[in-house]
Image (cartoon, rainbow, N blue to C red; front, side):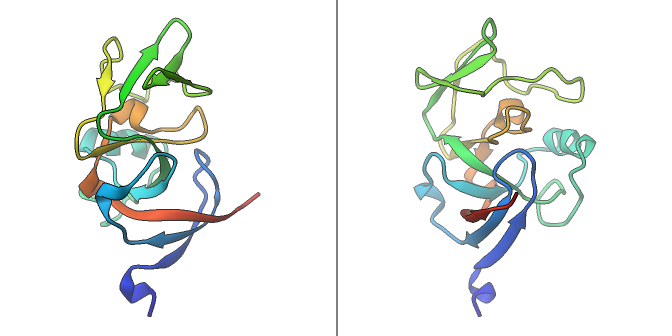
Length: 159
């Protein structure tokens, strides 16, 4: 019954955010806030191709292929993100983000010009993983609201 209404229990082993059991539920896409977990599809074919290099499996669930990923929202529409290359650290709305860096990996193509201030577009969310090595919006940009599939609530962490 709950599944027919869009509610599910999902086990996530991502390695880039909290591994655990989540409660997946439908939601009002404009009501998402910072630090909430979401399941989302990558925003473009280039991001999907990069993700395949890291082992993302193909499926029919997302517009460009791939399986929805689970990460948390770290910036919402209008937020200003600055990358300070000298310190290899990000600031969101002038608040330094501990552990949020860019990794040097030839498989990653940065689709954002980090020499400028990045402002999260209206109708989009900047998605981050907890692990500093996470493949997230730092590389492929903000996720449009219509690419967010479900709100995820962490029930408990897995070891």
